[in-house]
Image (cartoon, rainbow, N blue to C red; front, side, top):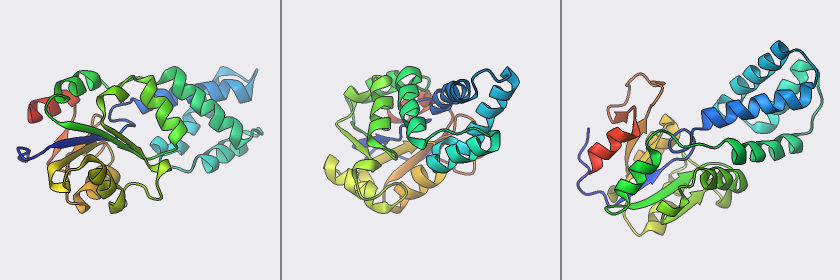
Length: 220
């Protein structure tokens, strides 16, 4: 692992880094299957939910396309606006923290400036963040939906550093997505650590942790 002695600010991704989006979306997929398939057999509902999870691609697919595709495949009709309304409701009902997330932030809060930088809609990401009760730890929360850019565009990381009053070289970013949370921050001059709880990337990046507790050991 690298040397982090000069780090003044630590910034986090939200989905599958501090918030367990996999769990939240799984609950949401099951809710949507129940809602649109009604009295259909449980096996059909299970297939619908599983297909929705695959199409969603951990949130990186366009939601309008995801919903229209799964509805078409299963022969049902439902408006995208309904889907988004229900996704916000699911985010409120089923958001939960990644293991050790609050303990980590509590430990780091006295030593570092803490920030959150996440892609997504302001309403949905705000609901998730408030649902897991971690907003109080961050001096800055930046959601791409409130800007004219998004990860992995270098501009959004530089914008974050400007808000924090620190240089990119003094900022460490932690997230679960290699392009958005590693290559993007590195291109902006930050340091970056990959949180790979499910070994998605097979250790291709040396600065990788599989638990948030590992990060606490590195920074404290």
